[in-house]
Length: 76
Image (cartoon, rainbow, N blue to C red; front, side, top):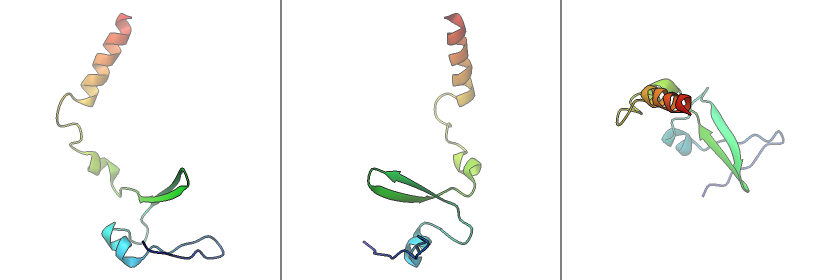
């Protein structure tokens, strides 16, 4: 566990070894949210579309699933 201190503005510095492991560099966008009593900071994907490529390679395509769902709804 690493302990850091906040500035009077609430800013923190992410230690260099953690920034390197998670590819956080100048301009990287981070998401911050609460989960119970924890504060979680997560780097956002730089190219989310590129990262999602191939996500639905196995099984039915997302488009085909959506079309099938619409057909089932229309029958009701």
